[in-house]
Image 1 (spheres, rainbow, N blue to C red):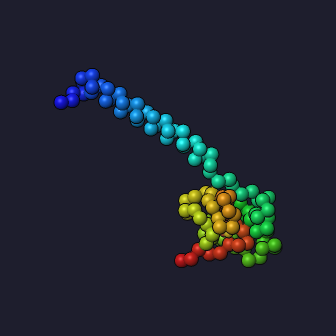
Image 2: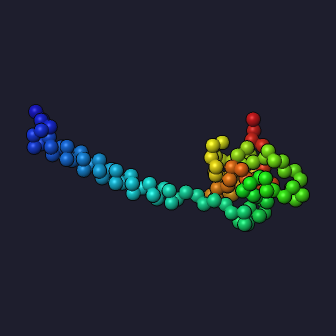
Image 3: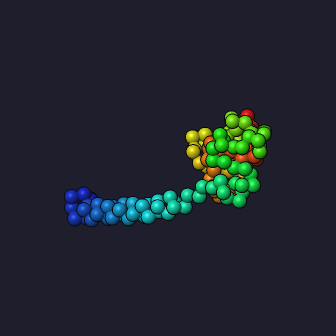
Length: 114
Ligand code: SF4
């Protein structure tokens, strides 16, 4: 019969502690890598952004250059938006791995299907 207060019980407890500590250390070692691996954000000066007329803020779109633009059009309500409505930045099918702003816009904007 095993008694937790016996030497064997303490040994098992020590093994559990060491095992859990090692597991925690592994988790801490992985977390920073995942944070560092977050996709980069697109810049308005990026080649793709310039070609698409992308702006981080839909309010700053040149209305003479893009007459079809409407103030209600934002990346967050575009069919290409890959984030949730709560995300400030997320992926877009037009920008590969780079993230774009929820309040942004480009001339590829298309309404989300209802
Ligand atoms: S395609 Fe849509 S989500 Fe992507 S940058 Fe243009 S407006 Fe934003």
